[in-house]
Length: 354
Image (tube, rainbow, N blue to C red; front, side, top):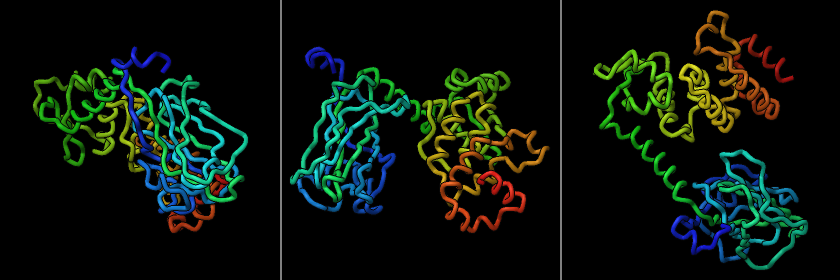
């Protein structure tokens, strides 16, 4: 904050947040007691010092260890507190960014000389040099060479300010999301192919989405029967409504829903859904579902099938699967699902991967 606290105290709200999610890391000692996820939440080890369960310990103890963490709400940063509980001093760079902007990392602090301290510490860094506005992600780069051992991080606190406008937007999004759940005042009901129904609000849908504006021209408000929606699952249709209300998709989706949303995005005139569904897909692809994604990408649809919107070839998905398989050949090739692929599917896969 560049203005005095006295000036902004009535406009800005000071917030302290602990890490809510671990987005990426270089290595971890195990996936439980010393995992990267131990950084989430308030201190579990501090003020104690030592190789103690409850902090993140690196698996490789290398010169290029790192962890990227996220926080629940973007803030205008004031200070970052890093709780180091074993061999403090290994942090060589702290960077920050806003996840929404996808900008490059902006450096908060860095050094070329890691060192070792004998007591746990709170490494506090002011953020006055940052120009990125609000942030909700922090990256720590760690060099374990000075310690020659684990350099354990207990937790990270982000201290910053939210404006009244930031709070209002968050509250508005939360209220709109609640409308989707609590539909007691809804004025339109949709019926999906499986007979399930979902209710909503005409004004919101028609103002936010061309598809529904055109649909309601055909089905005016004096029609009390549910409007039938064909060729889309309940799960995907719910996510479309969720996106209309909140500008985002729910954070955890099944891969089948992601594929369906990518194919339905243009039909509903909601192209951003394609990108968001694909981003969700990239987070959940693994050795168990990659071959299913490959088969369901539309690559093996017949020429008559391709005339149907539900069988659109998703080239981004094909490329994602190929890239994953190239990096995880052994795990994928020894998967039981390989035996379920047809000869044509196997040959095409080999051609793409090689």
